[in-house]
Length: 184
Image 1 (cartoon, rainbow, N blue to C red):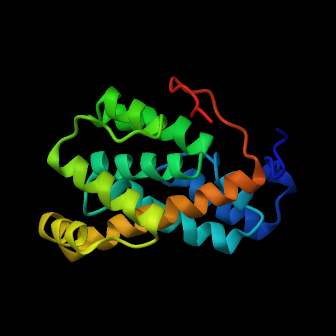
Image 2 (cartoon, rainbow, N blue to C red; image 1 turned 45 degrees about the vertical axis):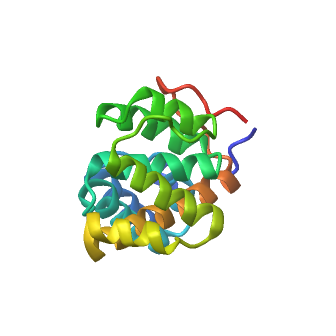
């Protein structure tokens, strides 16, 4: 598979691309990689996306561990290898059990999850598969995370869906990772 929208050397970027790229490099990510490589073609979109992503990834109301779980569910739904390669190791570092990560990769419901993990898994899976969330799951998420947390959980799913779409179309090269690639 060929990377359709690969890296642009910094010196060959337009002034607006350079400003947008530098903002990503200077932010918590520290480099222009993954979805930001193709997104640099639309600097304003990339700037907006990276600001949203920085919030959702690093400061969401549901916390880093559960955010990473939601990212994995989204990556699996879109068969997005770059997201998986980046976030499966982070999820493990944040305390998501290997059995949970493996089950998601294999499109199986994890057999053993904590209550908060089960809730996030159910919410995300329902949202992706039925394009909505049932009343019982919504009520449980609202009780556990409040409206702020529910909105951030929706945002994580939407944001990482956008990135998955970008990278699937761009055929973004998968970085080296300790995580096994997603099975087809």
